[in-house]
Amino acid sequence: MDDGIALLGAAAGLCTTISFLPQLVRAWRTRSTRDISLPMFSLLVLGIFLWLVYGALIGDGPLILANGVSLCLTGSILYLKLRHG
Image: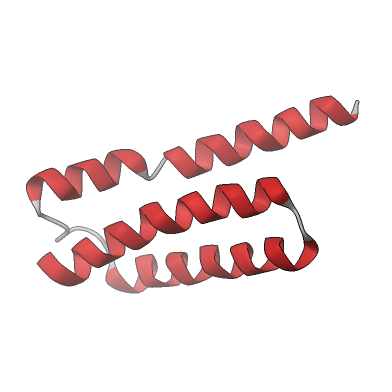
């Protein structure tokens, strides 16, 4: 049973983490982030950062990995938003 729960968590982490990849690729290629809400994305990046800190404090490897990658992806999108508007 524990393996199934771990697999479920890994699948959820993978889905939510890679979900940002298409937006990052599109923003990178088009240099357009006009339709991305700066306040929403800023809060999202902050929330992911806080989840990463939480994961580090409790020593949860999958939580650290998923949120570390998510932070890189969303942080990149936020950077492009700030740079290209």
